Image 1 (cartoon, rainbow, N blue to C red):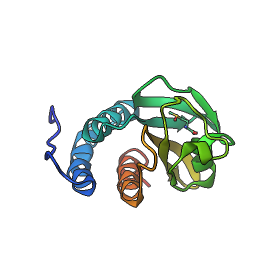
Image 2: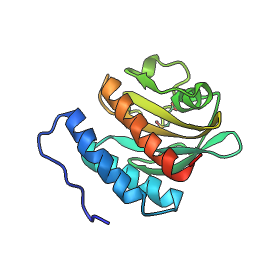
Image 3: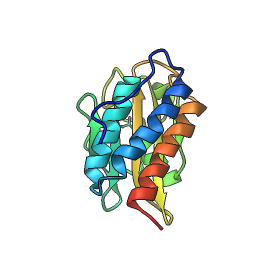
Image 4: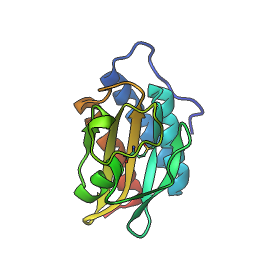
Length: 163
Ligand code: SME
């Protein structure tokens, strides 16, 4: 396994996602433990983009429970009825929130968080987990983040939840 990421300085966001994805795949396809892989994915996304907060909430008996992450202390449990994570888990679609203060029910784990993107991993109609990324800047996420973070979740799905 590679011990460090190969990242081109001054790459655009899309270029960086494109160089990161195969490296994420290479790291996780040789390890079968889900938590270990989610931990390394959080670390790789943090290193590549210096996100304020990036991590996973895992569905345990229809409640989202904090999983591996990088960033400040976070809420441990989120119901499917609460927050951006809950909305994504129940609606089973990616949600980009340009201004978290304008999202009804947003859960402020940190007052520094200003915008957010959450991507679900759905298997057989069942939400297994969500990937949550927070920024301390307003309007920091767009369709490029959605596209590539969904690809990250597709890689996790293909390795850990093969059909
Ligand atoms: N803001 C999220 C909660 C998780 S933290 O941001 C890490 C939400 O509204 O679901």
